Image 1: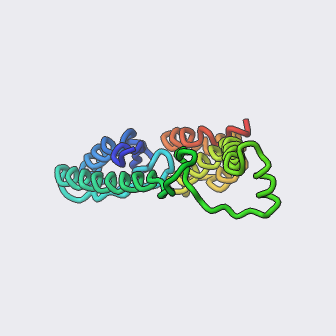
Image 2 (image 1 turned 120 degrees about the vertical axis):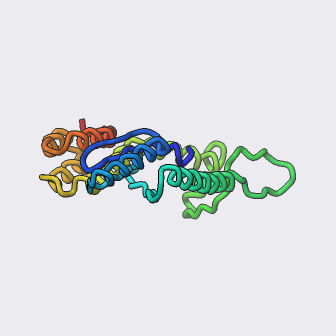
Image 3 (image 1 turned 60 degrees about the horizontal axis):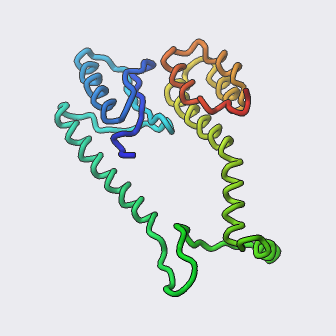
Length: 212
């Protein structure tokens, strides 16, 4: 995904002022910040990545036109870097020419195992490589649910730490979150600003998946 299309949400103080792609949100935030300066408002404006809750830092200085030009230049640079990394990661290592089975899009890596492990792998249908790929797939599928829970919890905690660390019962809410106690968590943050609660529950859509 292009950097400028990153899904994000902007908050001014405790109020959500924009949500959508970074390109759209950034322009709305720039206008809001200029209006705030004109009205002598000092509430902080933050843009959060919807997936990770990382705060996206931008250079807000200058006119709207100047800001847009800087944003476009940064987007081009970051997208170029991302494309280069993706391209390099798909280049397969050089293979020895000669007869044999064609490459199947796999990448060779060194694996260190005990002798008994190699013996067991060699005895499996298809040999060691096929057996290892099957084992990895089983492990990957079995951990997907736990990974979703962990990523959702981490994103929610990062957001609430940044914007709601001063709110009442923050520590209790944090403990309830990582303990997987959904009802207790909801009750603990019930007094928090409604926009903060709404965004938190969106981030935590998978946080309690194994606890309901």
